[in-house]
Length: 161
Image 1 (spheres, one colour):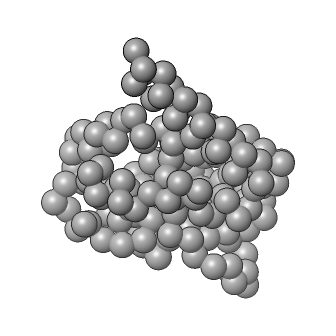
Image 2: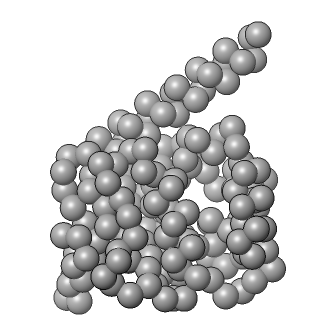
C-alpha cells in the first residue's frame, strides 16, 4: 500500500481497495464495475512506485469520485495547492458550502464558504471523502445509496442475461 489517509486510499491497487470499501460510507458505487480503471489512470499519472504525492492530483480524484452526489465540487483556484495540501470547495445537495483541506492526514472542513480557511476551526479529519460527506449531507447519503442500488440492480440484470 502507498501511504496512509485519504491519499493512500486513492493510490491503493483496485484489488486491495475492495477490502477497504464499506458500503455505507467508504466506497464509490461506480467503482464496483470499473475497479481497474483507476489503476490504469494511476500508472499513467506516475503514481506507481512513488512516495511523493501531489495533493492536487489526489484532489482531482476526490472530486471525480463524488461529483455525482453533490451540487458542486471543485479544487480551489484561489487557495494554493501544494505537494502536502489541496483545498476543495463543495456545495452539498442541501445548498451548504464548505472548504475542505486534503492532506496526508485525510480530509476536514476548514471553512463554511468557498475558498475560506478559518485557522481557529478545529474539525476532525476523515479518512475518506465518503465518510466526510456522509456526516455533512443526508442528501449525499441518499444519492450514494441510490447510485449503489442502481449499480447492484444493473449487475443483477447482467448476471441474469
